[in-house]
Image (cartoon, rainbow, N blue to C red):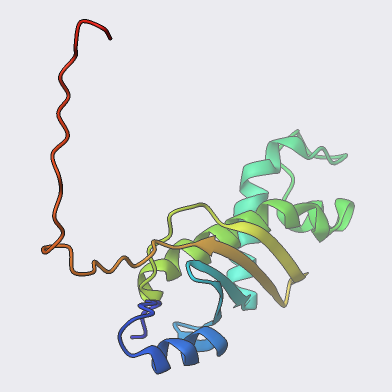
Length: 166
């Protein structure tokens, strides 16, 4: 398993290679591309297959089915195929995108070995259809801090006495 770890001191040639090249990982039917943008800012690119999009569409329909009204059916009781024919499948895309992005991102954080310190930002969906979905996002990660030689540092003590003039 590859880890997204930047240590700009040891193995500098490996860090430069990782910094300027993207890592491509194929894990459990998910295509991921990790591109470092800054020292602790990563751009993650995902591609979801049709099964994952279908799972998101099912979630979206179950979440919103009470809002669909189709003639001949009670409110919220119309089958999904009828709702898709009446409104179009695109009406389910917004919540399906949210479901797929959340599921794939949080599922891949541990696999990639990154430690995010913020929520995903700049989420861009480049393709969304029933056949698949492509999206990218940016996330800040925990920076790697390396301590220098701090044992030999001398500190002079400053008195903190308060005089009557103060």
